[in-house]
Image (cartoon, rainbow, N blue to C red; front, side, top):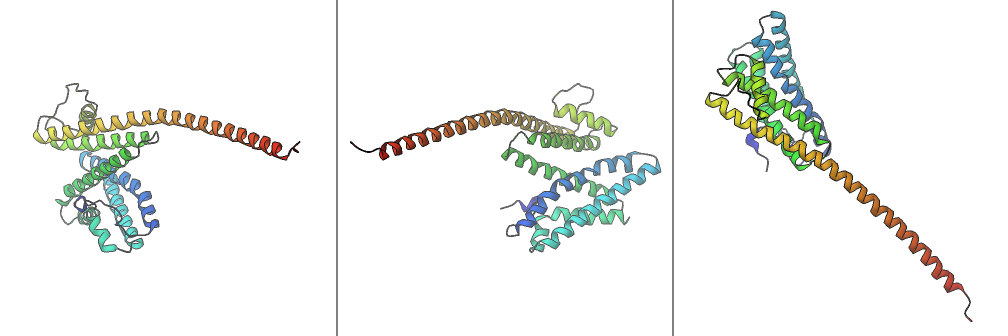
Length: 260
């Protein structure tokens, strides 16, 4: 049973294989688009220049359009449309809140939109982490690095919001990196309760990413050893077949010899 409460459960059971294939291809793209909420926030709220604020607003509009198009496409290919919406209610909430914020109905919707996008990315990263844990290979290293980078970007935004001693997004990113790497230079430390809770989560994610990279490197060397072993087994089997064929030919030759 999927965790419907998460609001990010993908295609429900019972759909065609093509629907699941489309979802797998669109999923990483939507996570990358959701990450654009970070530069949108930086440009729209933290920059004084009107041109930069306009770029941030355009990114917000692009994110809204991407989520809307993705949801409409999924509804077009799914047979269980209402069930899909129930499985992915977080997507619907992001679209509705983004639409209200872009329409300018109430500026209080804007923080909610960004919180929902951060939640979406966090849940997507959680699912990605679980998937990588089930399928550890050498090819998982780029995904692990992407997971770590995304976690640091999101945590930097969280520290900027929650930590009173952090006064810029750049300082939040630095605190997120030093926390994830468990370096602790001491120039920035979490002091509020919310920032400390976030620091605990960032340390756990940092250890998880490091473990994934270590496991992927180990899987690479183990895979090389397994390939060599398989090659040796194949060579031995081929030699054994050759010997069996020669023995069979010798037996046939003896059977055809006339008896005295």
